[in-house]
Length: 242
Figure (cartoon, one colour):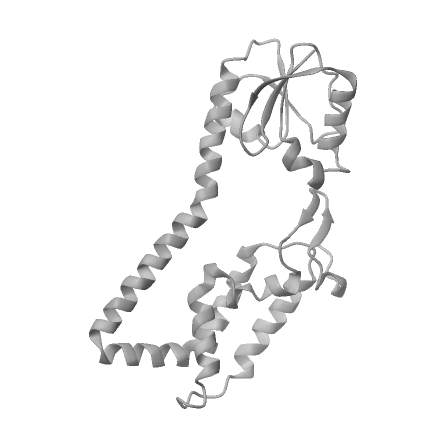
């Protein structure tokens, strides 16, 4: 990983895994703990602390709490990729920074019990909704994997190869018994008539444009005719080589 100030305002990177595009620049993503919906409570508390700091007599924001947050955010902004998990080390310092604001909110809520109960119910409902939202992709992916594995098990004579990329471990875990060829590698065996290809051209064409998955895909389609046997939403297809 190479840190560079040139990455701070970038959101497109070329990695060994291919082309990576992110929806926000690195600098904004590195401060996501204050604005992203997954950290909604922290962002709201930070806004409250800033807006009411003088009116409610909150202590000045301590540079000793701000310094590690900003330094770590600067580090994240300079590396050539993004991962929400990298924001987690900020949480202890954010807790120190926003502790007085949280104490103020807790004290106010304790004076009005019904308000405190209503707030807890709202927070629990919000977190439940966010948890469901966050898990939707994993649930959808698991269902898709099951459908693909079930379909392939019906097509698996022992002399067939399966050319694939992205699902090798899943296929192994679900007992799909083809001889599998991972398109990530340059030394791809020559395809034969009757072999199958599991591929997502829609998802891979941009990210892996200059990488071996797309090079091997073009090698197959340039040298052979393909019949589409099955298709799923999101771009996944099973092809038969002729």
